[in-house]
Amino acid sequence: MKNQQLEQLFKLYSKPLYYFLLKLSGSSHLAEDLTQETFVRATISLHTYQGEQARAWLFKVARNIYIDEWRKRKRRESIPFINRFKPAEEMISPYGLPEDTALAQEQRDDLNVLFNYLPEHYRTILYLREVAEFSYSEIANTMDLSVDQVKVTLHRSRKKLETIAQQKGWHDDRME
Image 1: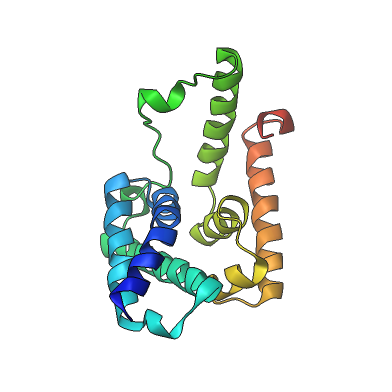
Image 2: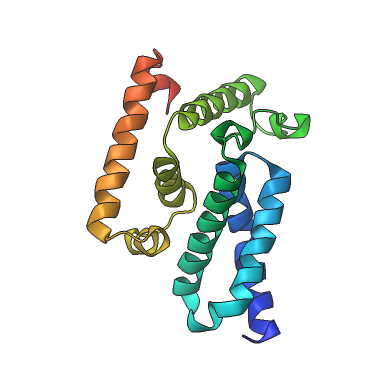
């Protein structure tokens, strides 16, 4: 792969990959390292992928790198899914009412807490669909599933999230 092509892919996908890995790992430092590792591995065989296919492949590589790292540590607790400690500047918005901002943040935090209870493959598929806005076929390529399996797993992960919310006594209005 030419350096110019790799540089272009890095510019396009480094931030989305970083945020994906940050959601999986909960650590900004680990997410940075895993993002770099993703592109190191990409230099080896990305020449066979182009366009949207490259995006799905990069996310697949990133997920596999995260799983490898998780397995090395042998403890799920050592890589929390959500970083609960956010810098103060993320909490302050120059727009809108402070109450609205606080409520919206509380709802995001509630949802993030619920994500901690989901298995990794459910978190991954929900993130790819809802945050990264992957198509079903891109998710299928990323997770080595058929499109039908993606649809079923996505449905199950949403149902599981809803069940967990009910078990925790959280109402639908908290999850909107």
